[in-house]
Length: 232
Image 1 (cartoon, one colour):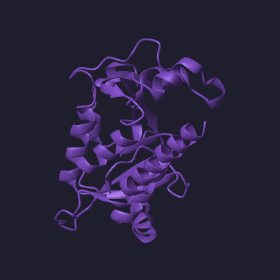
Image 2 (cartoon, helix red, strand yellow):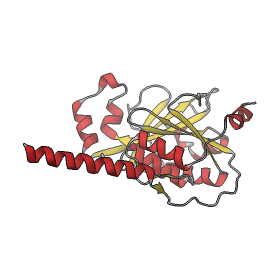
Image 3 (tube, one colour):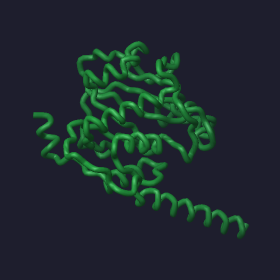
């Protein structure tokens, strides 16, 4: 028992070291050149275990992701402001719409190995003042890179929604590339997407909390003034 506890403490300690290092060591190590023009706002939205990325529902974005309309999402909804994307383990993602519906098998798959799925949700106005919402600005070129990376995460170039999968009228699930496991999680996917947009994350961010800290450390957030100017 003593050897077991010693081994467990070593593994736990090593995990904590990796988590701290993965948060505090930036990726990429150095900032890329910045032309100063960052007209596109994106949002990073978290809950205790998951990270989503929201991109503005502009005409160009709706054209890029036009296939979502063919899957039944009402892209012409009058209050549409954002498309929200998240990647995750297929079983846990699709079978756990609320915390009260957590099941053992999906949890075990999420902790080991599972197929992946992309969740897409339509959203109206999102309050940037919420503690789980972070706002960032990127250039037009960077936004194009981000949209391309997100589109490339779908299993096929002409995605079809998974039949019967979704939480409501304004969201759908799609087959995605890659396998989900505890080391390659929804949060590491979000970090990879953000790096494609020219942002810096931690070296390894398996948790939304560590990703949030690294984003705050290594990226400049819009000022309250700039956000106010955006809405006036």
